[in-house]
Length: 162
Image 1 (cartoon, rainbow, N blue to C red):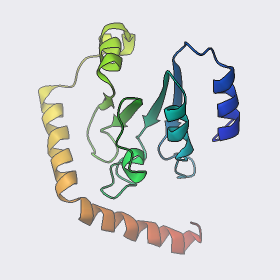
Image 2: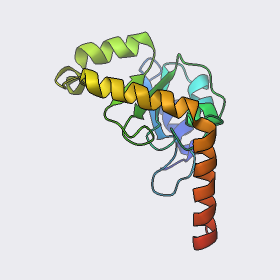
Image 3: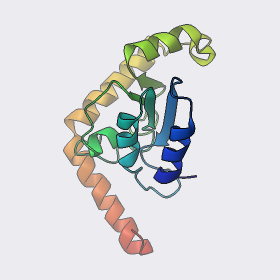
Image 4: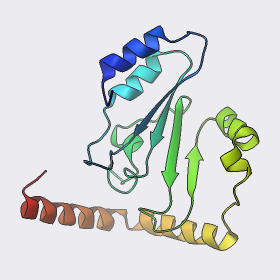
């Protein structure tokens, strides 16, 4: 069940020890803007053959010191057991998405994932647009963060929610 760490631990304990295990979460849940618990990361560190898949679609551009998402928010630097999915269409106002993962995961997806194999890559123009937006995002991150907090405050005060 959703965010039930105890239930997840039980399922992982009962899973075959020699099989790969993938725990998929959203960095920020789109329905209520709650941030996924850090416990998911710690569980992956404890379990052999476990990977954490983090969908950063709603967390990139909204949380973390530099608005880089869930991994930055929790100061997670380890990359061997993390698969990060990010979209360019939200915070960067562009097209496409990316997967940041260990090399063996990228090689597997490149050679076996039909959605990767049979998808047309971004055009050079779209790639350049995304890069320009990313460079702007990085250069203006403090201003963007201030704007985000200002808009959040307006919503909190107007709707009386947090």
